[in-house]
Length: 68
Image (cartoon, rainbow, N blue to C red; front, side, top):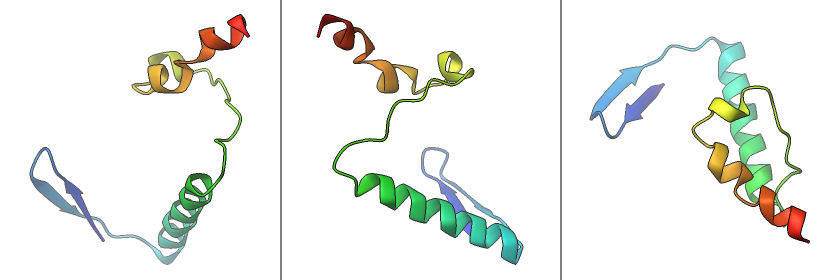
């Protein structure tokens, strides 16, 4: 399996066991299930959310809920 890093213009070859390859395929299938939903899954705040690069994306509407 090859992983391409577009910005770095780099490709890395990764060797997976059969078990790991199945886990990757299962994860990809789960992503497609989420994409196909009418609404996003419920928000779940985890202990590492504050330091995540996507924090503002996930919680951008958090203040809007207080006004409703």
